[in-house]
Length: 270
DNA sequence: AGTCACCTGATT
DNA sequence: AATCAGGTGACT
Image (cartoon, rainbow, N blue to C red; front, side, top):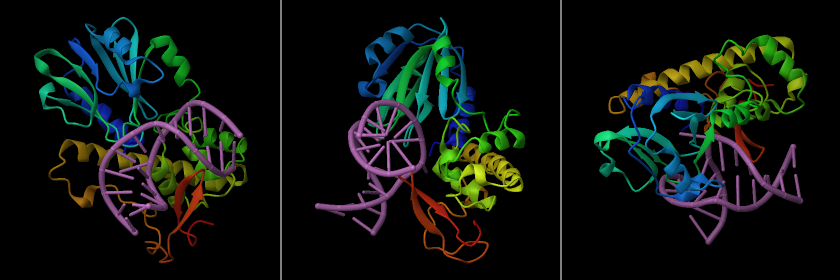
């Protein structure tokens, strides 16, 4: 379920997995199409023998930095997952790519739908590629003032604005809907028509929703077995069409925006 | 701004 | 059999 919180949790987990500092023994794309339009075999050759120096995240991208100034950018799209296994021979059938380190330890990219993408760039290309992205919503750069200025420049419906990675980086269908619910904003409302107080509320709800979700995602990935429902992120509107709103009891509605489902409460969000 | 394509699996 | 899915980029 990869929006910002899940990608962030994966990033932290990878950093604790003990592969940073290791040398790549072998890289393999089991499904070369996930590198398109790049050539999988060229990425494999470019990575082999290099040291993995750092792993970080920007928006929903995982960035694996290698010696020599190369960056492997992994985007999980809908169903991708990235994790370390102790032995590459334990790979599942959904594994689309794999980076092996010493003693068969392997970083695997699993993706049943194979919509995810892996590309290789130089550090410089990477900077240019990421430059258009909006601010990280959990960084100091993302302030109510910033949101007010950006909002004034956009006539997009609020939900589409939030999902645009070049507005705010990392929000997806679930957390955009949840943030709008908590700020009591109608998802169809054009951004530039929102009052100042609403934008303040929206800023606060984005930060709160994402922080909560990062916490749950980290717990979920650290101890999947004993992960209690109580501490998991729970949605007020997402995927609750026809159920009654947890605050006002009116029925949650589903509408279509930009080809995706948007869930909202007509009572709470005017 | 809307539609499709990319893929596969789950649900209706 | 048809529809839906947490994302994005390339079309119109």
